[in-house]
Image 1: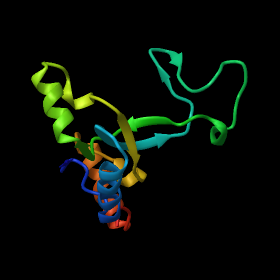
Image 2 (image 1 turned 90 degrees about the vertical axis):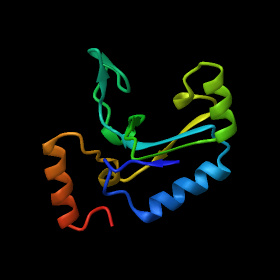
Image 3 (image 1 turned 45 degrees about the horizontal axis):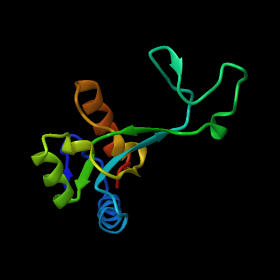
Image 4 (image 1 turned 30 degrees about the horizontal axis):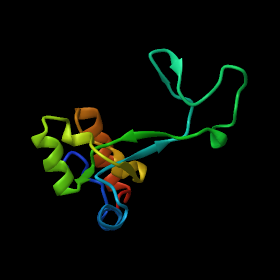
Length: 126
């Protein structure tokens, strides 16, 4: 398992839930992230909505945005994949453990640092 310091608002409860899911969920790779339930596009192409009408965001299929807040792998299958010269980071049966929005915030730029400080001051991520 790897808990990334760039995600300082992850909670103890989420870490515990992640560990339980990794142990009992049968995943080879378990990633963490936030489910975005709003219209999303990639390369100017709709991912989870149709141009035929305006669906309510609550009815859209969520996009799973990987945050890298916490990540885990089954060690035996990871090593087997790695030794085979393949990408072990994304191997085998993959799953995504949903996090709260504060816990999914990763700090890579000063703007995100300021957001994390404000969220922590407001008591989010506890």
